[in-house]
Image 1 (tube, helix red, strand yellow):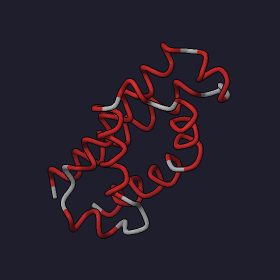
Image 2 (spheres, rainbow, N blue to C red):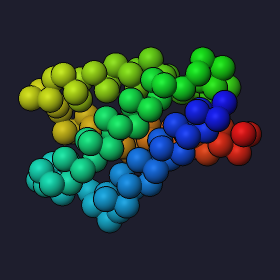
Image 3 (cartoon, one colour):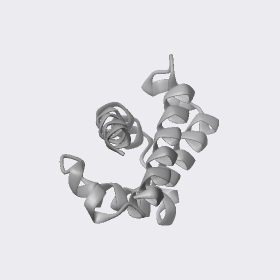
Image 4 (cartoon, helix red, strand yellow):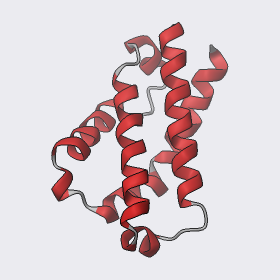
Length: 111
């Protein structure tokens, strides 16, 4: 579990960076800023890579998170980088990232 804790901390740090980068920004500002996109996408890649390294036991304790979908999105970010839909990325930030943050924070508290 020690490794899981480190990965969870790493995921949490990526989320905090994304939140700080996008604070006060709206979707249009995100779409218009390649700098912001690059920063956010890089942290999403790192976050998703770290989720793949979590044990099954840890993932099972946060069963409401679709870990498989996160891994799939990582593959899109890494391998289909020319086809990244920035609106989709923004929607993930708004819709999914808060739930992931809550789940990761909860897992960290349990360790």
